[in-house]
Image (cartoon, rainbow, N blue to C red; front, side):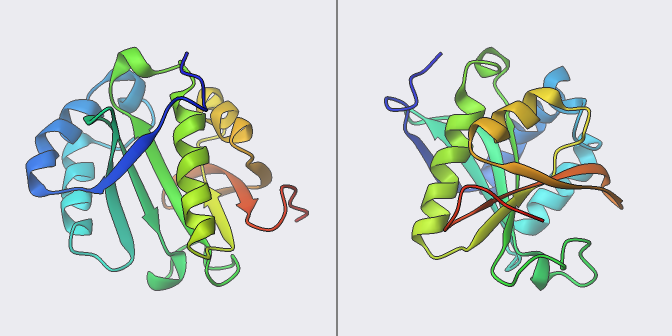
Length: 173
């Protein structure tokens, strides 16, 4: 398990050349269980490359791609189900694609680092919405300081709404 102090991740924009790697991750059992059909996901990610509302990123460790992360502004998408969140809130979706790196502490360390970078840029709140049955993801997000505040069902399916605010560690809904 990497020590959080020692691990440093880089986040770079997804290019079309990354799509085959992401597709290979999407068919891995630990990813496929929680993400939609790979062809649909790849089409959406490719569309996001030129989007202003979603920022698709490759997560790198020691210069090697290990996962996918996207941040999005729910206020920039018509009828997004999370528009009830405060203005400036960003949402995240993430997966570690490399099976050997799952359950080694990377998920919480990646989210922790990325969220701290967002807070430094002035983002007031970050939300994440794992499936309530995805205990591994929920544990990683809790370890990264996220607190559950609601359970919802949207067009994306069941979601445990979790948040982390820039100025306080605890969120009272």
